[in-house]
Length: 317
Image (cartoon, rainbow, N blue to C red; front, top):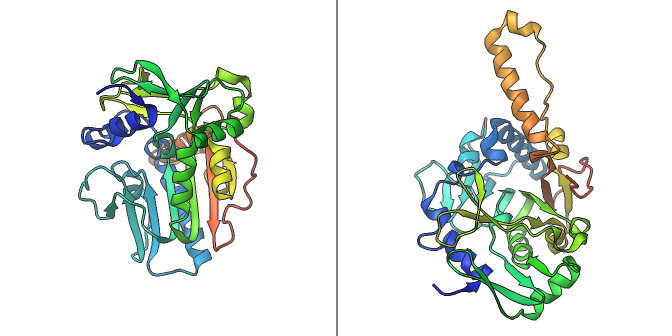
């Protein structure tokens, strides 16, 4: 394969016939909020319940997980009513779970959830207004002048950088996903940045490879994940809605990192260990230096926002 623009090369490396997400089990290579703790699944179940109530209990009520991996979240949801229709959106083959499995986002009335999906939507990279091309081994070279839409995005959302990770494809992907919600709530959870973070010019390029739990030099052979931080403010502008911190959203949904009273250890050792494990998992999700700093893009469609009480400041880490 000759050098290709980053977006084309990334699409092939992640989602082509021998792409990373088709041949690898993502959970073996990195942890997300979904894989880190069952507390996250309980919080998503609480949020879905609020959306279900706001919709008046439709039958079916849709819970659609975009970028579902191997269906870990849908399998971990507690107390799912029979009328809830669970759908995994993933390009990997159906592993045979008792959920609907599809490569395309269906229309839905309910909750659309996407955890760490936008960061692996392929994107273009520019340097001084020219497309950056990449060889299979990750070696880069400068290509031709970038198309006007990419230059316009860079001028608005990354004005001081010579090297720009253009998030236009992510904006379009998120807008298309929100457009599939007839009534309900769309939530995308991801690590990212906003315009103020990008004000230091070349400080924030983030495109990297990831394999076996650690960052690696990007390769385009399908052997590693390829990811870049999401321009969360640009995605928000594409759909409207709000941007909140994960730690604030999860607290509103009942996630509590308070450890159990030590006195419980003597009276009920097993119960104490269970509650301690839950508290530790909650602490990981709420950590302001880690998962707690992630952004939630929240867009209500035809209902009042079930997360309206969550502060809507942009994530600042």
